[in-house]
Image (cartoon, rainbow, N blue to C red):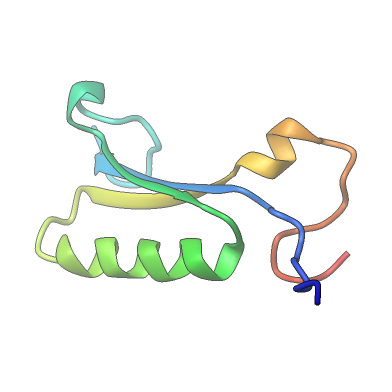
Length: 84
C-alpha cells in the first residue's frame, strides 16, 4: 500500500533582536536563532509560536516564517496554507 504524501512546502523559522521596533533589521546576525526548516506552514507556525512565546519578555525580539518554497519556485501559486 502506498501512503499519500502531501507536497513539501518548505518554511524556515528564524528570529533575532531587531535594531528598532517596527523595522526588520536584526541587531546582530551572529545571534540569529535559526529554529529550523519545516515541511509545511502548520508545523512552521507551531514552531514560530513556541519560539515567540519564549521571548515574550524582550520587546525587540521577533520571529518570522520564511516561505522557502516560494523562493525555490516563484511561479507556484500555493501559499502554504492549503490554498492554491
